[in-house]
Amino acid sequence: MLSYAIVDDDAVSRRMLQSIIENRGLGEVVTTAGSGTEGVRVVLDAAPDVVLIDLLMPDQDGIETIVQLKRDGYKGKYVMISQIENKEMIGRAYQAGIEFYIHKPINRVEVEAVLSKVGEQWKIGRYLQEIKQSLAKLDVLGGDAGSSRKKPSAREIVQPILMDMGIIGDSGSRDIIEIIEYLAQYHKVEALPPLKDLYEVAAARARESKQDGADLEKEGKAVEQRIRRTVMSALTHLASIGLTDYGNPKFEHYATLYFDFQDIRLKMKEIDENRMQDNKGKVNIKKFLQVLYLQTMDKLRD
Image (cartoon, rainbow, N blue to C red; front, side):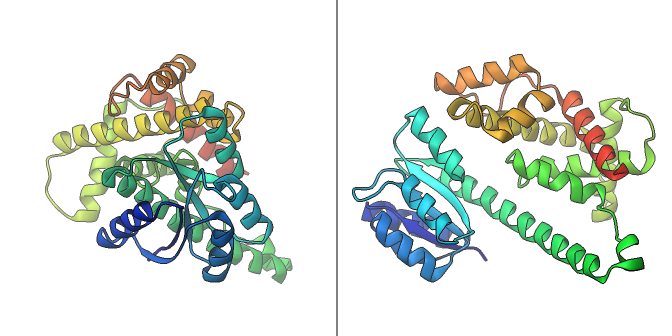
């Protein structure tokens, strides 16, 4: 279970956030603070997994607090909370190291959705760290042990990519991983099979794990909808980052590589004009899967 610290000068916001986190089973709030300077002290003492921190506070703002925490050795994740919509300040917050942004006034649905994604990323990050530690232990053995080190699997390659795009917790991410694992194992050419075939592959693999008799064609259509929503979520997440910080490394690397530039620009315009359409819109799923497959195969061949 994740542990949280809440740093916010508004006592009502602190109580609301704590209530949502603990009542919805998202984790445990281990400490709170009403200012940035107090926040540094209690976070370093409690060492929570995640810090929810207000952007604007009277003594020192959230960005300054994050910089100080990092300088003092805190390694957890940050989620910024604020009603400020200044793009430059939000961009600075992402540069400082926040993972996500929660708007005020606080909305339970948004808080639950954001923190669920943070929790998924934390789990995957811990899993990847364990893998790195295991590989490091093999390295120190040297000789034959080093030469026989296990290569990462397709799943281990894909998961951090989806995590970077903010969709590792989405239901469609599991279908995407199933498809890439299948392609890596059985598909030996660069061009993808028809998408309908890939959707049914994911449906069949899910059916095997559940051991049920679901209709393959019907479940394939459900897979298509899950993947479409997930890829659209990735597009929205990257567009949000690009809108506040066009030079963000994640935006620069993933946005135009996995998506058509005009789709990214359109989504950024929608966000900027505050006319989001709940993950509706155009997205090139085939390009997304094609690029993910090719990147995975490149890393498998390294």
